Amino acid sequence: MTTFVDRVELHAAAGNGGHGCASVHREKFKPLGGPDGGNGGRGGDVILVVDQDVTTLLDYHHSPHRKATNGQPGAGDNRSGKDGQDLILPVPDGTVVLDKEGNVLADLVGQGTTFVAGQGGRGGLGNAALASARRKAPGFALLGVPGEERDIVLELKTVADVALVGYPSAGKSSLISVLSAAKPKIADYPFTTLVPNLGVVTAGSTVYTVADVPGLIPGASQGRGLGLEFLRHVERCSVLVHVLDTATLESDRDPVSDLDVIEAELREYGAGLENRPRVVVLNKIDVPDGQDLADLVRPDLEERGYRVFEVSAVAHKGLKELSFALAELVSEARAAKPKEEATRIVIRPKAVDDSGFTVVREDDGIFRVRGEKPERWVRQTDFNNDEAVGYLADRLNRLGVEDELMKAGARAGDGVAIGPEENAVVFDWEPTMMAGAEMLGRRGEDHRLEAPRPAAQRRRDREAERDDAQRAYDDFEPF
Image (tube, rainbow, N blue to C red):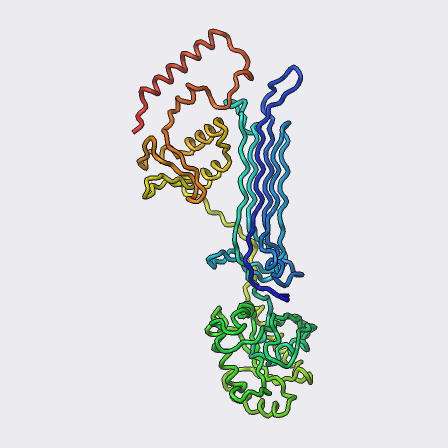
């Protein structure tokens, strides 16, 4: 049964925003007390949080689909809907978040580090929030925005100071078991270790972590064996320890050739591993002929510039010298790292000529409008409500979409699409006249809510509106 998973695909779906409410306050002797529809609640976010108690991505391997709760719709009497609850997903320290194309979105290192994998949709405004001096009785409300849905990849890269690398059955698991309190599975057959093991070592005043990386073989960097699955766990380590078997029974292997093979695989994998400090451990010197082989190859290794230690995990020989030497290298690596700077807030102001949307004419003659605001406004519109559609038209006109369509060569009756191709709203465009809405009455107005005007004033207002409409009609040039 699988107990360790270090790479999963996760489908994160944030909660949808609740719809706004269209309601009119009513009470005895006051049947039209004004709009009182409340706003919809915000949808919950999907948030990844580093938790030191989590060491594997196994939970997301079994349940890859995760969804936050939706926001509740608004209600009458100015009651806003409840916000959706954020979904907190604990991940191991060292988790890297990537998109489907392999681009890194976040590198989660350190207890409590967070990343919002899915943004909850905003709640729709109720008609009480849409009311204004000109629109006193909106007969519509805005819909909630759907939550963000994302397919992401989670990869675990072990956070450790020292990595033990070497052939299968070189004694890495035995070494980590005697250096630390870790208790990995140990046996005398190849590929015993199928998961990276972590151990904490204390040497004097220095405390550091050691990772036992599963055995590498020739071709591991190209995916042969298990090596490629676990080479990523070496990337974050400050010190590499080559564990070489001085008691191998294979006639075509010896400690020096083993070292050359592993070094070639590390160079092929890249990720800066060629620049890490290295230590060579000649293991199993307690085995007959093991000490003789160690004495034979040690001068050659030291001539190459390696620092060599002869140890026996079984007989507990040479462990103290090795642990303190690793502590010294770890301390040097920590001192060389730049100090973490305080969190900086980067402000990227928009260009002064950025309209917030684009209009592009496509090959099929459709004019496509793309932009955060127009696309969100379309998702918030109830197209079964004519007044809501008119409100959308007013918003797009104020944003300048109609002017840009005319500049792009759009004519009456041309197709206009707002949003991405797979989820767009398409309509036949008709240029609006600013006086047109005035001739029909302002959207959202209800004269029953206004104080009565004298007859003479009403007559003068009608004459002024008629004159304004006639002048606008005479001056209008659609093309």
